[in-house]
Length: 238
Image (cartoon, rainbow, N blue to C red; front, side):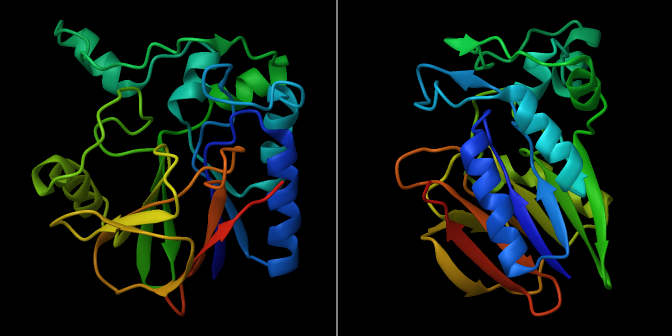
């Protein structure tokens, strides 16, 4: 099975259309979106003249087989992620480094698009041959990436590996970080690598992929072959 895994569209309809065209040429079996379909900010993005939240949601809804929610998706419909709900129910303080969405422009969404985003899960378990893949926007317990805390050490990543173990998942694919290329961790530390092709080991690991939103030369997506255990990180140039 060949998966195209994209993340962090941020209403960039041009990049999304280009990636879908590329996946058609590559002939993938399934398209996966790791969230943040919406969420445009003048402070972080440059595609103000072509941003289209509703068109992006509609295109994802029509073309993608697996879609999970990102923090900006929930924010655009005023939905609180489970991570913050748990804090509220426990009457504990909200984590200090929570996203404040400064400079974010209100997403103009239809009722259908709002309903689609509201029904998105925070993670998805995919059975691929004789193993399972966990797809999420970010790491457990903050699966939608509602905080600005980036886990990098073995201790910080432990919660996500334990969550993967409970879900019987060998691989975990994540977005959120807008990384240049990709990063992976099998539990000890995070390795950062450039765009390109690699064979990956058949052992439990987390893989962080790039964003497709136009962002200098960092835009890209992943192709994962679950039979050959081959991973391609493809740059997007729109």
